[in-house]
Length: 171
Image (cartoon, rainbow, N blue to C red; front, side, top):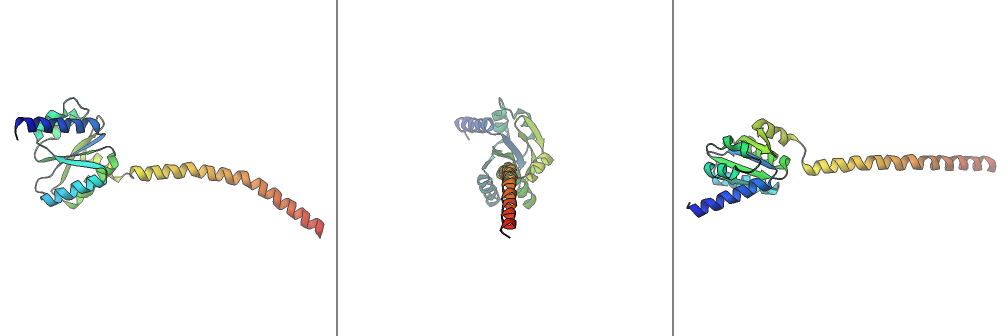
């Protein structure tokens, strides 16, 4: 890798660190190319990206971003996952770590907050953003349904009373 390629790699990583909300740092020593490719595909399906980068270049790319505190995590063969949805990326990474002993979550960052591996696993247990949106919409619609039922109930009761009174007079 010559100087221009290194500069491009650092710039690309720096932009990725600036534009993302969530970063996962993991060690991948011993994974095959097929396994890393599977991880990348799973990350892409979840709306995240996974990159392998040289630690020295990654540390340079961290400078001037909200993830500068993650510098100490970059030791050994390191892979970086980037995502705007923290739950989706954490789920993919945690599931992959359960399947492959060689993939080890080291830590990460959510905004300017540094996370350890157990915090990422906790994030992975949360429902996804789409599920949370659906639940929220359900909660919003429930009161409207109840209000409609309450508003319609007196009219129905009046109609039943009038019908009973009409039936009584007809008899």
